[in-house]
Length: 396
Image 1 (cartoon, helix red, strand yellow):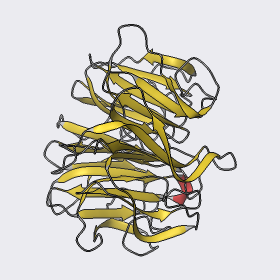
Image 2 (cartoon, rainbow, N blue to C red):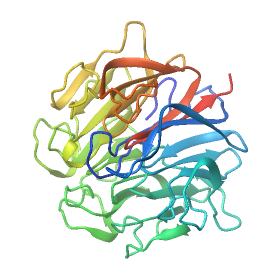
Image 3 (cartoon, helix red, strand yellow):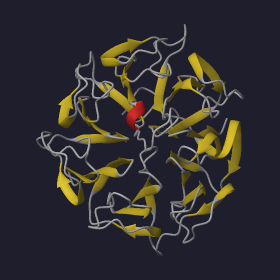
């Protein structure tokens, strides 16, 4: 996902219902922007009835080196530093902090403990499954830790891991996960593992698999970015074509219907896609945001909380063009459970949609924000999943 000022983003979502549930979003640092050592976060962690560490305005964390990428899951947030280390904060009851414990760490970041000699090159900037996390090392191997409830780690089981374990995939260039499923680009072939009730594995069926199954219908096309949400997965190709599959009750796939789509569907858009973000959760539906190469923003799917940005609560079954505030051009987007975010060309963060748990970040917990509000300036990257959001600030 690459726009003039943003490189491809991953977006994913994870889990259990509720308006501010799983979702996704991610945008890597804008070209020419140097992130600093400060991460800021707000919203709340956890599932319905078990929310924790709620904040309606940004809370700052200082990391021990400059930030390369930030990422999120429903329960935990992550920062990849320029020295190849990964640090985490939030919930840890399933080992999702990756430090060998099941303790929570809300106010302090802890280092994820990889084996000696492992240097991390990338993390999903918003595509982590429920209570789980991924990282790709400099040799193209994937490491995972946390719950693994659906077998999304592709290890043939659903065992929990308190520290990172190496997965049986090589040459990985992009990956995405949400809920209890995940999809990987391994040396040019797209594989999925995990639950599949909504067709989210993309193999044409709905049977789950704890070992890799190949996604059908992409015919060897070069995938630059994978994205995911509660019951959906998407693939952005090097040509700018975007394919989506899985859950479609509210039009998440963008094919004009509300029927499950268990194999990749080419979404018709007016120009090549530069970046895409998936959001949403289960019965509450989901939404898709797509930035095109001509600078326009398009959206489709669930609109119950105004998260599509078209000032309407109606669901949209096929892509529609969204108009930012006058004079504002978006360079990166992200979307969480039912909240959407965009970074403007000048580095300002805008947000709209659900805010019952402080997801907007402007100090208010009123249920919805119909129109985009400017939250912060000097933002290099944003990642959002479920009810929580994290940003990397710039050095300026």
